[in-house]
Length: 148
Image: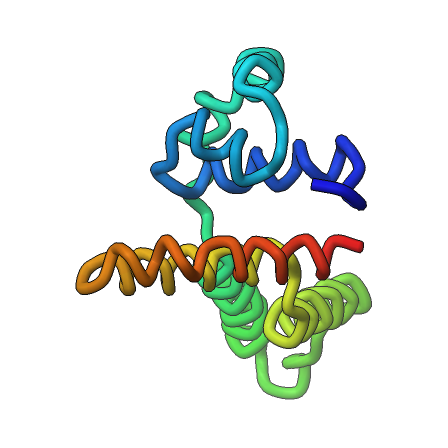
């Protein structure tokens, strides 16, 4: 895969390994590395452990942040009438959470693109495996383009 750095290839391989059910050989072919390199990266990076721990989705992270804001607001509303104001620390936390939420809801990162393509290919495979195989190089090419 001309044009991609080793770090980009490694990041992409890790993304495919931890989120999808491809074999190491399939990932190596898609990313443009040897099976030996892929095996080395999986072992050295402890990707098997990482694969198990990648359970907190973007949606779950957003729900957690909304819950934190709700908790802060509930705490503020429990105060006596006339004192139901956020402290500077609480206001700062609410602002930071709101900013993080906005960023997560509006930014489309490489991980989001890879996840969307994974879902698309999984869906297409259910009724046309040949079409999914034809689509894969095109989608991979788009991912490589976005990495530049």
